[in-house]
Structure formats: structure tokens, C-alpha cells
Image (spheres, rainbow, N blue to C red):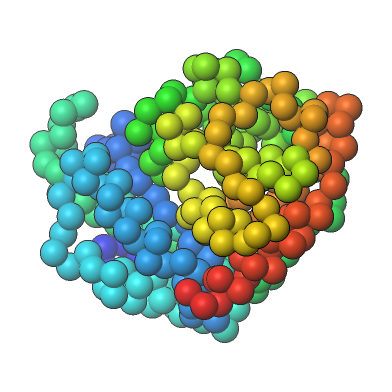
Length: 281
């Protein structure tokens, strides 16, 4: 079952026509949220990021789009799919309504909620091999639109195809200044000694929710020094550890980049703190 504007319908139902602006122009935003036993991890952060992004894209925010309303719609969808006592992946997509060419006829929006099963109720460290490579065919722009979680993800799609064709688990994306900004599906962190570095938003990386939470966690501990600074490709093979984050996997250690293999000590230490923060809310 999927939820379109508060109405539950079969996932086999045709929901959109050829005028859908998300399809035609990528005129849409989305949030991907982990839901465990009916609890949405970091829901307030997801909600306020969505509201901020809608304002930036000049979408009209409906009066009923409160924190509580969208949370209830998500939980209703989770329950109808039988995941209320399990772990589930939730995707909430907001798109501008039909009409117009590049210039929309209306700034009013619709939403759709989809859910699917997850294996683990908490964030865990994946011990499998995980090799990455730089993707240098196209670049991430250094602007505010790159910080948003929009449906304009063709660079990520092409990079994913490149990774699959060449046997990599993921790719590292670079911006127009040739600085490493993120992976295909998450925010990048680099560890050297007790320093943990992540690219600043001004470099064009996604304004990720788990990135934000890890910045808070690392900044609050005396064990590590957090740096929000640009990462050069030349730094990668000098790092002790590389990992990336997103709202579904939590923390994913990168095991190998070219000839360099990495440890996962810091990843393992941080994932426990991240789980604790998720349970607190």
C-alpha cells in the first residue's frame, strides 16, 4: 500500500500521468526515514529539512503539513503494510502539482509515502568488503541546490552504473573544484589520528541528517576533533579510516580505495552513540 495525499491505495495502482512534474522535470523533494516499531528516527530533523527545502524551491506548504500530520500519515502507511512492529524504510516524496513547462502553473504540492522492509532494527556495521573509486566523469555543483534532497539525481544514477560496471560498491563524487564531497548515497567522513573530517556544505554535499547527528556526537566528545573542511583526493590514501553515512544504513565503513585498505575502529565506536541518539529522539 502507498499513501497519496492521505489516501491509501494499492502499490499496483497507476498514480501519475504524463503531466507529473516530478517525472518531467524532477520538480520534487524526498526524505528517506528509518522507522522501527512505529518510531521514526530523527523525524523532527527530517521534517524541518523538508520544510526548509520546500521554501527554497518556492513550493507552497499546505496548512495541514504539520509535524504531527505527516508523522501520522507515515505511521498509518507503515501499519497498513504490516511493519508497525518491525524495521521499515520510509520514503516521503513531495512534488509540485501538474501544469506548466519549466514555469509551473501552480506551486501547490502533493505527497506520496512508500514503505519497505529493513533487516535490522538498529544501525549495525557491515563487515563485508566495500571498495570505492573516484567518479570523475561529472561534478557536483558548489551551491545550495546540491545540499537539498531533490529528485534531480542523474549524476548519482550514472555514478551507480559506473560503479556496477567496474565492480565497485560505491563511488566518491567530486565537485567543480575537484574536491571530494560525498558518496553516491551518503556523506563522507575521513579519519586521521583523532581528527575526523567531513566536507562543509559549501562544497556542495548533501545536508544529511545523520551527518548532522554525527557532527553533534563528535563535537561533544573529547576523543576526537571534528573538522568541516574540504577533502582533497590526495588525502584519501593517507587516511586511517573512511566511512559514509545516511539515514538508512547509519554508518558504512569503506574498506578499500585503490591500494589502501582502511580500519573501522572509529566507525564502530560512533555507531553505538548514533543508535543511542536515535533511541532518545
